[in-house]
Amino acid sequence: MMPKICLLFLLCFSAALTGCTIQPVHAPGKTSGSSEVISSDGMDLETLLKEDALPGAYVLRALDPVFIRFSGIQEQQSLDLVIDENGMISLLHIAQPIHAGGLTTSELEDKIEQLYIDGGIYKNVSVNVTMTAKVYYVQGEVNAPGQFQLTSGTTLLQAIAGARGYTPYANKKKVTISRQGKILTFNCKDLEKDPSKDVKIKAGDVIKVWQQWY
Image 1 (cartoon, rainbow, N blue to C red):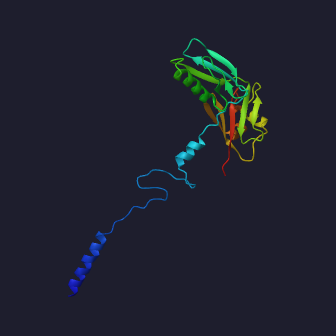
Image 2 (image 1 turned 60 degrees about the vertical axis):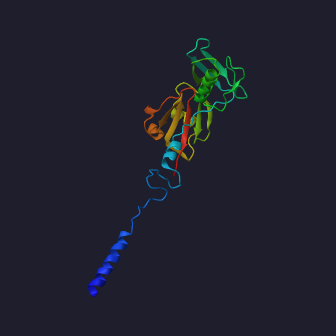
Image 3 (image 1 turned 90 degrees about the vertical axis):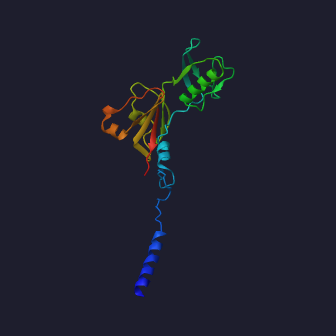
């Protein structure tokens, strides 16, 4: 009798094991097959990195002087303009003034090219827009952000000092200069230790002192 009971018990135990499946355990915020990384505040890491990399490009405004150079056409080579008080500029063969205020130089370049090409005025044209004023701009974590007259030999550290220095929230290790579509990044703590590495500011430069995250 006992052997039959033991055999029956073993058969039932084996069937129970067969019916069980082991489910994989996923970390919170992830699903099977997903490689998404979630930060502590619910945002994925890739998004955070992209947001942090956004450049602080200067936005054109009323009374800013701009120099527009055209390539690929013979009729007009360049224009030296000042954005009017309404943020508008006038272009050859374009009937109505166009908005320049509120755009970066790169955005204005794209807009002008699109107007000429889509309007059938030119088949191929390349546009380059630059600031012509001898000024630079300081933004971000400084005590007096704004526009400053450029004098010969002005350096990055001098420009920040001219904006009354850093706020308590400034990240001295992350200071950027936007220059003709390029973003240059500097560690000003290193520059302070070795002033020979300090860089000269050019007309139209946009300096941004980023915030320190504690």
